[in-house]
Length: 379
Image 1 (tube, rainbow, N blue to C red):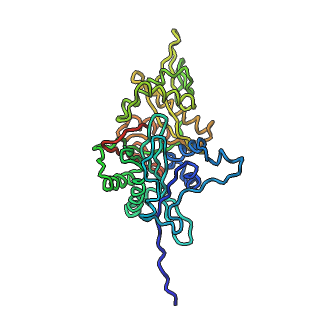
Image 2 (image 1 turned 30 degrees about the vertical axis):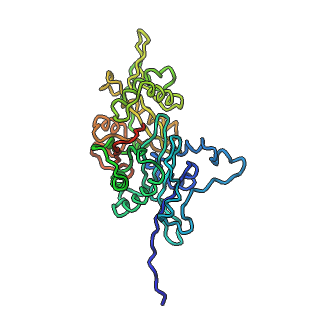
Image 3 (image 1 turned 45 degrees about the horizontal axis):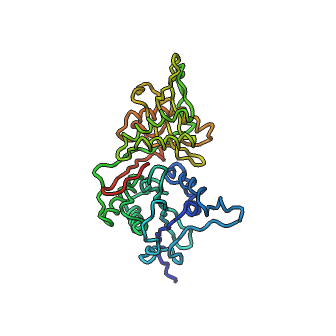
């Protein structure tokens, strides 16, 4: 009688030099977990359209999308020789890439486990972002550690250690990454996390209704260039409280101008009926958008207008706009664990799993941990 041999899983890493190659491999998986993938997916979609070899740009020539680089494709296993076939020179200031981790079993399609991004935004380089393609309950240390160690081994071949100024992702993934990165590079993590937050969401079913009328002289709307100066001041104020990611007034102006030009900033303005003078009480910015999900990534209220529920009204207005006019199924955001005032605001608007309430699937803890003696970027 034939002896049945055990089926062994094989885990490997793919290197993606372009957003097009990442999406060719991972977009279907991202779309199944679109809220969780928001930290990776929207930027990849946006970047794909700007890439010379993007399938979008060559569609008329009927060129098939370039397949992602799978090292050691003959057996899909990532070995030491395989790792060294990744570009070994550190990336330049203009380069970015993604790494994806997969598990395969004989005669079955490979399964996406996690993704790492190393990308650059309009103001500076982004942190290393981590995405898990499995539910939180499945992220045991036995599952995470070997995959993260393989990921870190590949990452070291791709960049200078100074580029990894921080890492942001779900808590179990991030802490495992930090441990493996420290062991591999002798990097020194900063004492306190840069950011520790809940990832939460709101839908049409959970969004609360506005219960009070907007006062005369108050307006909630999409920002335009007449709001640039005031929007700049609030972007500057937001960054000033977000160490180490502070902005000069020049960069805050650049950031606000980009938000307005891309229709990503909303304002709560108060107009003085006697003089016509305008004050911007609050801003809300929406910068990561995919087919069904948009992320609120910045909420800031002028200190002179706090306690007036301006932020709550504007977040509710923006969420309603995205869910109805924008036809999104969810709006997501992060709220810091130590920002109880903001957590109460988002809870009243309809974001889930806050203020001690039960957490549905999709609400999870994330953390950003920085490293000493690195080149700080911005996000």
